[in-house]
Image (cartoon, rainbow, N blue to C red):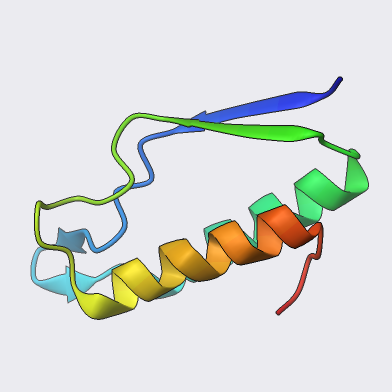
Length: 77
């Protein structure tokens, strides 16, 4: 069994007032590619998925899209 351990995604994080959502989208794209290329069986997420208790809707959407992509074993939507 191949396990990929990841943590602290912090979706919705701002840096000096600037959204980092584009970087986070790229991260998910790369993660999905790695999972597919390396035939990963299980992705373990430890730590903070969101940066705040009430993340922006786009951060939640990105997370649920990522779960959908990873569970389907697809590198694209």
